[in-house]
Image 1: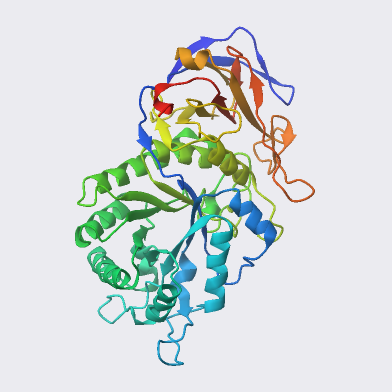
Image 2 (image 1 turned 45 degrees about the horizontal axis):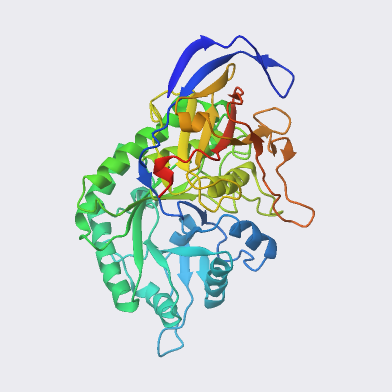
Length: 485
């Protein structure tokens, strides 16, 4: 993608009534072959604190979650480090308990979780307590056995994790080396293989997204035999919720933090003996510690979410688990009222418009890009696009200059376009509500999702993205080779 420093003669009128000059931006997409192919469950979610007490039978929560399917729900995080298992031991009425527990998982709570996943077309990934340890710091599996046996007896299909952010155990004055955790995973895999005909195991869910975390991952992978691990997991945030500022959400250098970290983690995995397994971004959002009240629910935060989805897909990250579905101000859905935040609507649109095949954009991972463009083949099930359609995300992080898009590929330039113009409701980046083509992004009176229809424009219609705004485009009849198979 090339920024042509040539001023467009006409000014672009903003929704607020102000005007901004525009630069031409040439967008070049490789439509001959895909750059990566993702699972349909690429965009997934997490549920962390309060997982054992959430009302999973709430029909509104089920409805909102199902709109994000198919996907994984990762039940894991810090709450799982303080989890008791209250399941009868086989052959007795005894109960197994974990260490340092403040949350209790009962058969009733587990059944509600599993039924919720089934009702919403989601798959369960569940984190076992990784802090039930022997004195030598190896994992003590005994407390988990009754729970695992229960799941096996009920023939329930579950993906598993062990522990959460072991590189931060030092905050509890505990040290579990990456080699030891690798050995723990090897032992857990043997247990799972004995209990389940089909199962999968992901880990180790590293907190540090920088060099220390990458080194932990590299050593961990050396200690897990090939075939014992199905996904390598790490976590990523742009910073602390306490120090978050609104400008950070659309700053290209802040966004590039993820580009650098994801590239480095990908290198660690692809140069290891496990190079063929999936890379999971097992937990991620904008800011950690629950997010930032002044940033996380805003329109501006959408830059972080969309850019992360675009970069992760381009780097062939198989799964991205958004922290969280509900809980914390960084959630997709507000916990008490079940009101969707802006990032929820962006997630629904991404699910509908961006298919598994990822297309390369010229300069699409270059550093300090102010206009950031990501491309996928449009899903075949899209309501109005035919086979061979292309979907773009365009993020203009420049706060003064609009981006007038020019499409170098003739197939894109000659195609009708479905425009999904997403704007803050009151023209402020700090707004916590948004519109789609002028229509409020909100539930209907019956609690249903609106239709989320595009504005359909003719081939050659000028497309301009205003300063600090983002947009999605579907090239309806592009019929590009990469998207026809």
